[in-house]
Length: 335
Image (cartoon, rainbow, N blue to C red; front, side, top):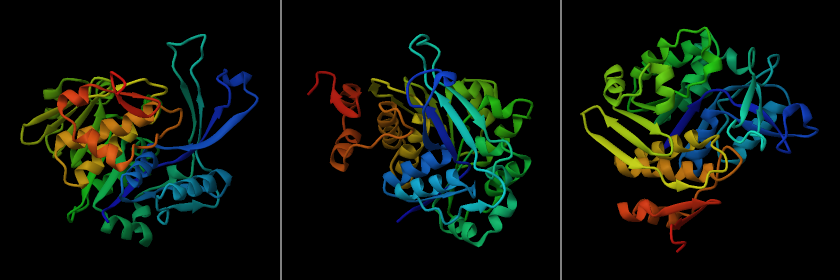
């Protein structure tokens, strides 16, 4: 079975049980969240031997993270448990009915977390080294690079290491709060060292100063493919050989957008690992993202194998007619 390793921080997530402002909440729901572990769970759901490498505190939040990832089929043998530093935490405040255009908001409590202490020494852990050596894919993100100088060194060490047949993917995952006062030019340097780069069109303006396809490809000439996620419109793959593939997004009744980008990454990367072409891989990304867009959590369940195959093999006309409501893939006529 093909193996994938995702490296980064996973945090405990608290959110009001009722859709009320945080200061009015009397109950908070506890879950977990992290871009890289979301991708790891998505890759596991896609049939890959998936692992997450990171650090958590020796606390209840850390135990919750390890248990939940294990339940989703993600290996955690490469996770270090810090005896002193805490597990990172974030609070997700739901959008308010009184301000429907305001969207949800997030508060981070991750400074000085166990994960921020990752560094090049993490790679010396024999369990981590073994996972990375046997991986077909290593997935990284710009989030980890912004956690601490040592985390940046870790990401750069992985990106500059000999590939030995492995593919390294890098999702920019722009987080404005993490890059405030930091040199964001390192994002371009890191992205250009990867084999596969994923970036939202909205993120590209912040991270690279442009949303123009040709300019982005010119800024990142070395990756084999640059995937631009154009929100609800399409996804575009710009290959190093100059070819281009664009696949329109599915029509989705969106419940909440959080986690959709990570689901897209898992779908796309799984297709790539299975040897599919760009069009099929982009479609896998869209399907996975659509499943997450129709639930309140960070991940939505995929359709069964037979239905997934039929969706991916549909004609362009059939694809355009699909509408996703409550996780169900239907034609616009409801058939």
